[in-house]
Image (cartoon, rainbow, N blue to C red; front, side, top):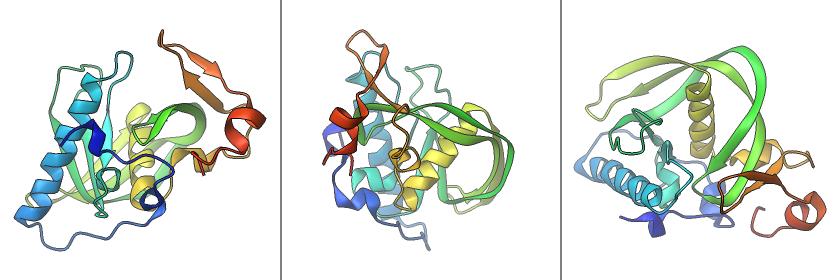
Length: 190
């Protein structure tokens, strides 16, 4: 699978709630491998960005599966942790705004409010239950990806905030978008 297999808005499947995984079959493990290869392919095509995580819905597989890169500060690290049926069990810390991008929302970033700490429970690819406490950027990643499994995209949290939308320039900088012209009436985003 490649970056071209990652679906983007306005694809309606991104607004569809994914189904829980019962048995972890060879087919489910194949979906996980496809998610990894699509993320790495996307990564290699982007000079200023790193694919830190992906939800199965983003490769048009409506399963509650999320992968998170083990070292998202190192673009050469192609290892991921798999979260099957992930759920946030507790929000902690404070609500903080920071930038988010998405492999399914081309070149748009947003300043999204998220809690700075979350507790997550999930199963791994072997069916073993485990829990994670995530803080800072990792907490943001979990919230973003688990939102995907519920049919929510990060722009949904900021759609009424004219100051929250940005575009990544060719030089790797973020510039604010004109809300009326570039965002509000965009068929691409909604």
